[in-house]
Image (cartoon, rainbow, N blue to C red; front, side, top):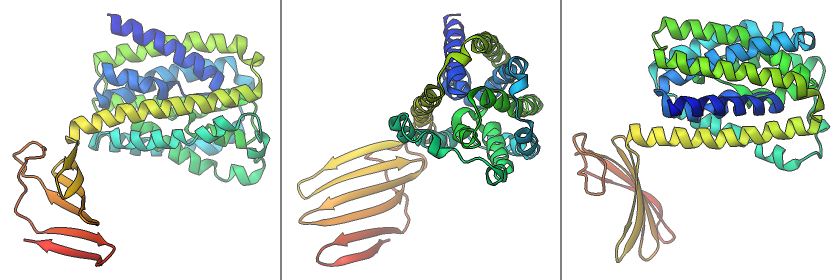
Length: 328
């Protein structure tokens, strides 16, 4: 019971932040939902909640929607979302979450820049509209795979010269069909459980409350603060996504980092699934890089035996140069 109460209040705060940042509630909630639900259920719960959020934002800001953007964004985003859902069924989303986290961290320079050069990034005109179908494909695919896109493409909306209310309204119009299609696909592929529906319902109620507050207070927020909070929220979401995804990768792929020190050498090794990549510095000065296979029946550890395979060792020496030796 406590965990659901925590989720609700976290969702209210996330959508309140989203109201100021122009999106990103789903990305902020991903680490919290990842603790409650199975990884494959997180996108479905996010899609249920954010679909309701998009509907409420359309109702509150309908007059601010830029339909010229919507008609270029949505048509290719929908089939791309189907592709993202199909990929989600085939593999864990942890590795893509790592990449998205790194992408979000790219907002750090914009956040540190402050108010300087805010208008320099705006590029209005037909040349910006040309890229909208491409943005739609990318947003649809990533949204189908992760359940949320949020702030990933907010900078593009700024470059189109949209005001904050237009960004909120147009993003909602772009996303609402996308979320409903994804929910149908998640249900069709058996990725929605009772816990998923409960989590999605709580997120939806929190989204409604935040949307009502946004209607009252959005016009009081300065444009430069709107952008700054957006960049800051993206950075925080990126850090959270990378931490959560890193934990999943370490657990599911048995990632182990090892450090060894001997009288004549110092080395480090990383075990990943059945692979071991080791780097060793030998005296006097020679660097060795080797890849080996761990016996499948053994857990990764410094004492795990290696499979009988041909091993290649890359040597880097200031006296002998770069050369490769092979061990049978």
